[in-house]
Amino acid sequence: MYKVKLTEFVNKMNLKSLLPDIDTDSIMIEQSAVNRLALQLAGFFEHFDSERIQVIGNVEAAYMKQLAPESIPPLCEKIFSFNIPCLVFCRGLEPSQEMLDTAEKNGVPIFTTEMTTSDFIANSVRWLSEELAPRISIHGVLVDVYGEGVLIMGESGIGKSEAALELIHRGHRLVSDDVVEIRKISDDTLLGTSPDITRHFIELRGIGIVDVKTLFGVESVMYNQTIDMVIRLEDWNREANYDRLGLDEEYIEFLGNKVVCYSIPIRPGRNLAVIVESAAINYRAKKMGYNAAQELYNRVTGSLSTNKEEQKEQ
Image 1 (cartoon, rainbow, N blue to C red):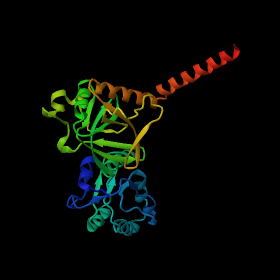
Image 2 (image 1 turned 90 degrees about the horizontal axis):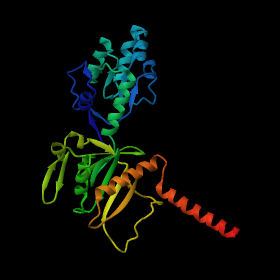
Image 3 (image 1 turned 90 degrees about the vertical axis):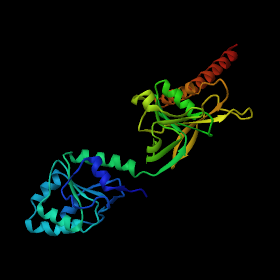
Image 4 (image 1 turned 180 degrees about the vertical axis):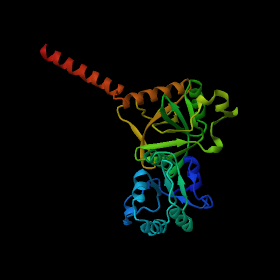
């Protein structure tokens, strides 16, 4: 289970603290979902997700204003008796002094933001989903090729970094070299990024470390990218039966998510960058509904059927 310091969340969302004396470094966020206080303001706390960040917007603030003054203190005591990470008021709204005093007494920080409630919730869930996502680190190179995240894998020294450098030279973008951190954002989305230490660097045997961002410019690098396909480089094996049509796809699994994988045999004279580009374009075409292998198969079977019919007529 991954956690995020509340301080990091506050800085990312640019929140204004109304209780600055409370230490936010010691408060950890464990859930990516955000809870909008609703039934809790009416006194219903069954199934209350107290581990989530709590939010109050226009509707909730308007409801609290029409409550009887004597009902506010016990309501605040009940809300802040739970171990909630924080309470955020949206649209620049601010709580009553009674709520501030009760929150401070219970050590619960309160923040305010100018964002609308829907925007704040969407931004919070998006960022927290990435930060709290399950993750693994693998050996490989992640490159953005024509908008597709291509993870190049293979044994050490087989030419992954050299292929990535040629792709960068051809206008594509590097995400990570050598070590790729993969996060599971959802059941169909894997996000790849680079460790901070090695970000934007490529190691080339015989040359050393190359700073891609400095040599090729900021347009040649990306912070992260979804992993859409995998290219597995392997030494050419005469005994192996390599796919020559592409009708049957191979998959590789990361964190329970399956990603299409192409095994590319390596031998002298093969231009790896062009092969990777072609694989990315072909994959993109398949996503758009066109499958070249299937089209060829349909043509061949159609031609055979026509020939058989002509032979019968003769």
